[in-house]
Amino acid sequence: MKKLCYVLLFTFVSVCTVQAQIENSPQHAFHIGYLAEMLTHPGLSLGYEKYLNDDSRFEVFFRATAGYYNHFRNNSTYMVTVESGFRRNLRGGLFLEQALGIGYFYRLVNSDGQYAVHDDGSIVEKPSLGNSFLPVLANVGIGYHFHTGKTRISPFLRPNFYWKMPFNDTPNMQMSLMAGIIYGIN
Image (cartoon, rainbow, N blue to C red; front, side):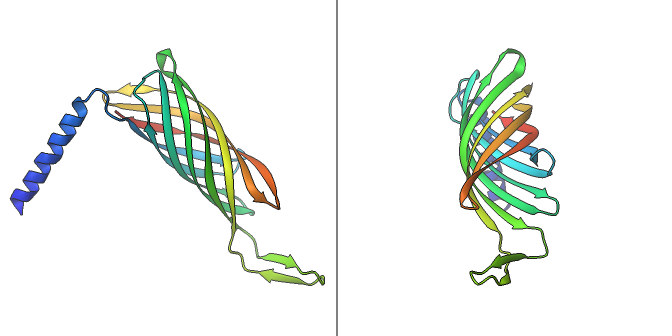
């Protein structure tokens, strides 16, 4: 058993060493951010980015995020989104980005209950299972890259715009602001 652990450890270290020496190795990044729906309702966002090219000045990426925000005395919303976009890295570390995507929102209403009105005018309480939305999203962002060895730490600010469907039988636009840190690994 001990020999097997040493062999696995040696194999893992060898693969990591060889991978680190490849110049065009795929880049990955993780982010954590403060997500504020309508700027005042606090939340959290976690995400993963995969860079699809090797150009250091113009990055094309695929991003998946999971988030949550709480609108006090109204709702709690959980979300999952996938996005694709590009980032333009300028001299000195500054970057600009934009992305488009699609997602899934699940909203739980924070109230004493939900009620429905029947055709005959009677009001009944209905179970609060929550509401689902399929948003189309667009965002832009600005940030700054700090390089430390093989990692890149980048604080960013990103306004997000969501078009939720269906919302009371019509589409609805919503905005949020995300401020966080991207931790990139070469």
